[in-house]
Length: 80
Image (cartoon, rainbow, N blue to C red; front, side):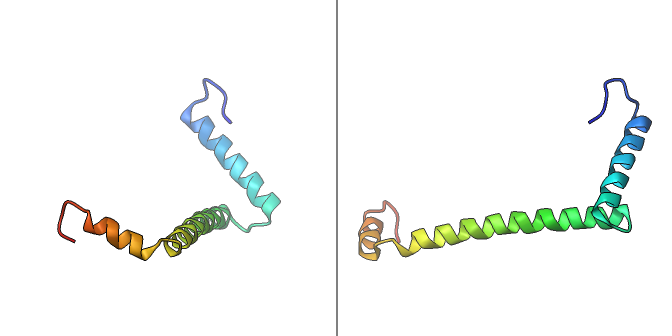
């Protein structure tokens, strides 16, 4: 993304240039709007992944044999 030997100022300009390019190609009015959409999209994808994980865990919990689980808990070394 950046070349070796670039100063922090030149990196800052390069980042701003790339953000403005993304802004114009995406049809956003401002860089802030672009960044807000990127953050919102990232959060939504992360939540979707967590929801999928929860659904998988719920499916696994439904398949648990309750009688077998109760027997296993009776063998526990602590009071249940």
